[in-house]
Length: 391
Image 1 (cartoon, rainbow, N blue to C red):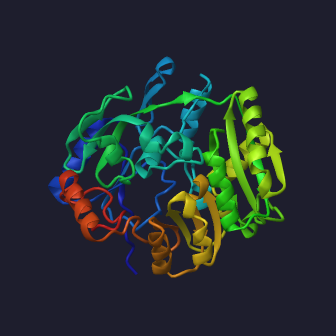
Image 2 (image 1 turned 30 degrees about the vertical axis):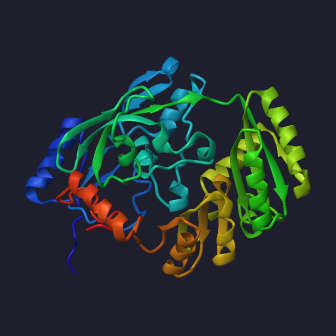
Image 3 (image 1 turned 120 degrees about the horizontal axis):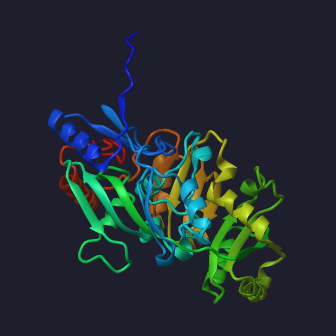
C-alpha cells in the first residue's frame, strides 16, 4: 500500500507571507486548507488541500483601547487569552464564543479567527447579537492573493457593502483573515438563572417566548428535554427550561422577581446563584451533554418560536438554545429528513459531527449567488476547497 504524505503545513508570521503563499498557490494551481487552532477542522465536507496554512503564529493583540471598547488582534490569538485580557479590564467578548473542542473530539485551542470564520456565538447571542455583529473591521488576503482592508475601529464606519459580515461565517472559503477589529462590552457584575422543570416542548417554547417578551432583559434562554437533562453533566430527573439575567446585583434581583411572577403559571421554579448559573450556561454553550455520543450531531437554526417543533418531527436527543432558535440534535435520522424538517420551519441544518457533509448545501438562486461571490473572491478555488460543498 502506498503511503500518502500529509500536506505540508506553512505557518506564516506576517500578512505579507500569507499573501505570498496564496499568490503562489494561484500561480502553481495548488489548493490551500486554512486553519487556526484546528478545533473545528472536521466540521462540514472534507477539505482537499495540497498544503495547509496555519495562522497559529499570527497570535498577537495589536491594539486594545478599553475606554473605547475596541480591540484589534491577529486571527491566531486564542479565545482564552483574549477573555483573560478583557476580563482584567472588567470587559467581555459579548457574543460569548463557544470552544466546542470537546464536543467535536478535537485538541487545540479555539482562536478568534476561527470563531469569526464560523460566526460562532454562545447563549448571549439572542440579546447581544452574533459574532459578526461585533466585527468592526478586518484585513484579509483574498483567494486571488490580494490584500483587502474593510471596516474600521468604530461601529458606524461602514458604507456600502459590509465586507466583514460577508467574511464572518464563510469558513475561510473567500479570504484569509490577517487582522480583525472587534468591539467588547463591560462585563456583567453578576447573574442569576431561573429554572422551570418538567415542561414538554411546546410548553417550554411558550415559557421562553414569554420570558423574552417581558421587560426583564433576558440574556439567555434554553430548554433541555428530559432525556438530555438526564445525561452528564447535569444528570437531572426531568426536563429543564432556563432563562438568564445579567447586570448589577440590584437590577438582577428585581428583574428575577418580576420574571418569576410572570412565569409562575408554568410550575415549580428555582433560582441559581451567579456561580451555579455560570456553570450551567457553560454546559449549554459547550453542548457538554452530547460530547461523547457517537451519533451524528446536527446544528439547526430555525425561528425561535417554532424550534420546539423539531422535537415532534425528528427522533433523537435535543438541546434548544437561543430561546429555541439554535437546536443541537443527536440522531441517526436520514440527512434529507433533518434538512426537510428545518426547511419546513424556515430554517436550515448542517452536520457538525459524523459523516462528512456540506455545511451549507443550497440550491437555486442562492446557490448561484454563492457561486458569484466565490468567483469574485477566489476564482481558482484556492481556499478551503470543499469546506462548504463547493469544489
